[in-house]
Each structure stands twice: as structure tokens, then as C-alpha cells.
Amino acid sequence: MPTDDDLRTLADDLGIRLRAGHHMLVTAESCTGGWIAKVVTDIAGSSEWFDCGMAVYSYEAKQAMLGVRPQTLEEHGAVSRETAIEMVSGALVHSGASIAVAVTGIAGPGGGAPDKPVGTVWIAWKRRGGYASADVFHFEGDREAVRRQTVARALRGLAEAAG
Image (cartoon, rainbow, N blue to C red):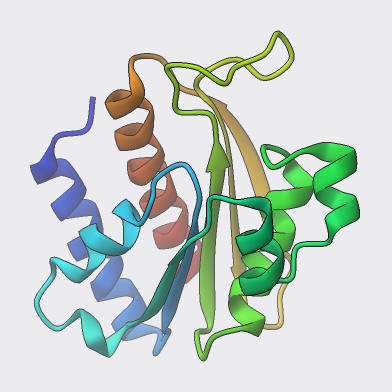
């Protein structure tokens, strides 16, 4: 389980990479509620590489703030590859950032279903001008554990995307 120190180390490494690549970051977070943005802004000087973060839980917020299509939410649900990709793309469109991450999932304890059990999380990453990538994860543990693992994996993926 990633500790607070682990998350701080990942965020610090990410900041170094983003600064070196002259990138600005935007986050679009559903199941983590802004935790990724919190971790990166705990790093002194993060204003050099962090543009903004959006915590979007409702369908309406995903549509209004990120441009997620109603049809996507109706056909695939909020916790889906399609929604994660539209979220990460919309985050770039609605910000001045050059790199983005989006997370959407079921942190629990309720809300799971046989095809999408608690711990199911989609994470998408995208650089401006590039193609989005998205992966599904099945994290174990309680709500805190699912969210903590999501933040860590999102940060690792951003570091990879930043180069």
C-alpha cells in the first residue's frame, strides 16, 4: 500500500520530469476527489508545472466541465474506458495544460456490480496533440486503499507519459 511518503516521492519525481519537459499538468478526478491534485500541490514550486484540477463526480459535472458526451455515460457508464478517455481529452481542451490524467472508478464500499466490482478504476493519460491511453485496474482493499492505489498509479503513469 503506498504511504504518504511514497505518494510525495512519486509527486516530486513527476514534478522534476514535468519541469524538465516544460509541461503543465491538469487532473480530472472522479473517484479520488482531488487527491492527485492535492499530492502534487504539496510539492513546493508546483505552480511551475501544475495548471489546475477538476473533481467531477456527477454526470452533469463530467459533461459541463470536461465535455463528456451524455451518450457515452448512458451507453458505457461513468466507470468505463470511453468515459476516462473523454475526461482526459476534455481536461486538456478546458485548460492550458499540456499533459493530463483522468480517473474514474468505484472506490466503495458500495456501488459495485458483477461486471464492475468495487476497486474497478479506469485511468487515462494524454499529452496535448497525442492520443489518449487508458488502463483498467482492479485494486483491493477499502475505500482509502482503492483511492491511495489509484493516486499512486496515476502519478506513475504521468511520469511515464512525461518522458
